[in-house]
Length: 222
Image 1 (tube, one colour):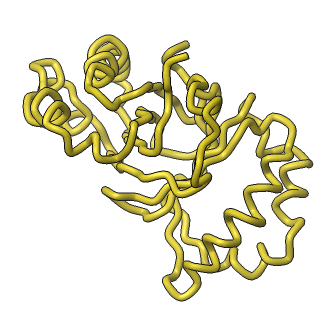
Image 2 (tube, rainbow, N blue to C red; image 1 turned 90 degrees about the vertical axis):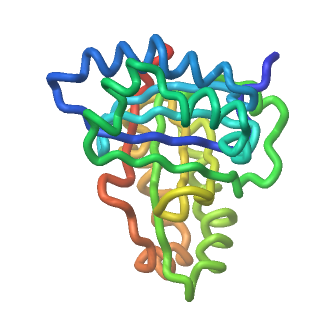
Image 3 (cartoon, rainbow, N blue to C red; image 1 turned 135 degrees about the vertical axis):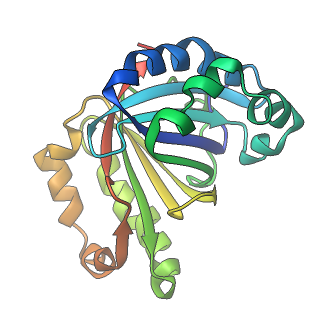
């Protein structure tokens, strides 16, 4: 099976005024995503709309690694030579609360080969997080060894990955993959959140970005 994910992500969030939404969605589905997927190192892509949180729209690109965004193929064919339609209706012209971040995966350190071929999840929950430097090392240890494992046992949670930003802010991104939109509203999820005493020590040091955490439903491919 073709590889669908590596160790890099390009994430683009934006809100769109209602008068432009139909045109924006058509452009993204018919031109923007297909064009980027022609760039070597872009492995798969999907678009999501917020069920909870903000901004409303997310385009998620799975990359071989984050260095793809420095490649000649990406810079010459996409970034520095936008199509006429992109110049006319691209997110920088009609979008609000625009956020474009590139990431490098830090958890898990080694991805199972089978997981490298899975399709885009139907639902995502994402946290965009900064943390005090004084507790950063402990924060990462807690997240990887105590916090995520509890959630992975919750019915409906398909997986989780963590990333550090190489372009953009906040510094950390957590991506949970869900079967449905209400996994994080379940009793099992709530129990996992409070099950470890370590969580009570670390949680007060986390700073979530506005609109985070958010739950998103895949809208393309449908």
